[in-house]
Length: 422
Image 1 (cartoon, rainbow, N blue to C red):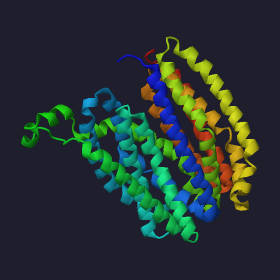
Image 2 (image 1 turned 90 degrees about the vertical axis):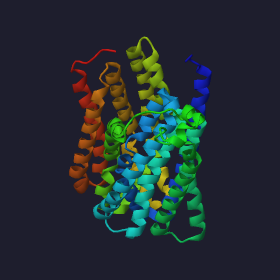
Image 3 (image 1 turned 120 degrees about the horizontal axis):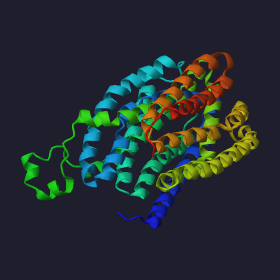
Image 4 (image 1 turned 30 degrees about the horizontal axis):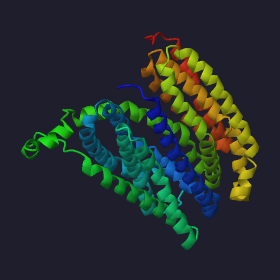
């Protein structure tokens, strides 16, 4: 296939445009929801979502990444892969969702009825993983606009429900949790109804399909068992689960001290995510260029230093903007300003970790990245358990920095171990 920089640029702009729309929906939702519910109820919602999100990678079984990789390499197999992946997703979701409900109920102080927690778990575990899977199908088919639109549609559907709810209902965590779940599940169902009918039957050797050459020719046939497909997705499950634990485990621990602290911490994290979206886009644009250039190390360090400077500059801007949070969200979110100032330079540290990951990949040591993720997650969880109970949100902040620091230390150790040179 010939290199077409114009098409690549157009696809990149399409995805970035949809990501901006997605971020806009998330920003508006955080602003409205935090003000509508208040710090305590908003914190209870954030904590429940955090616990449920630990199980989302288990429901997806890594199929989104498998679809993207295998489907892009063999586009004639995408529909067969999709049908098998959806079957795996369905089995895993049915098994994992009840466990997520129990985990939410057992690990958090009482805040919502069990039925509402079950609906939230179903939405966060099953619906989110299915939407990501279907979006990756569009990406594997190089339909960048569809990929971005599918991902952006989910937060916009939730925002639409929130606008209706806030206009007609008194602030209520129970009402919002149920509305959030309904919006998520309905959106996933609509996207599935649009995409799944185009999928192919798993076994094309059945007589009714063998008699239809058009079906056989369009779909092809790949003899890949469900067990092999699940095994292929295992590394992606491990990486995603480790990332979720590192970023979100502090919230159920903080919840034991009070949901208001979780709410303040969640707001600060969301502000950082939204403010550093352009930096994230630049990072994604950097990777293919690094791996394609004949001098990847020089390109990595040169461009990496520029992006690190941008991350530090963005951190300084976040520190200066932090006092605006209580003005935007109300005085009960005053602690979020301090948390935002403390977390402002976390993106710069995370960028150092990303540079280390790229360095290992260039050295032909990609298989060691799982050790990096595991070390970061273990450090983040352990530090949250040790630091949050006595120090509250300050402990949660240092647990996040500690997890990233452990990742960088692990990368340094692994880089000294001989590996295949790129």
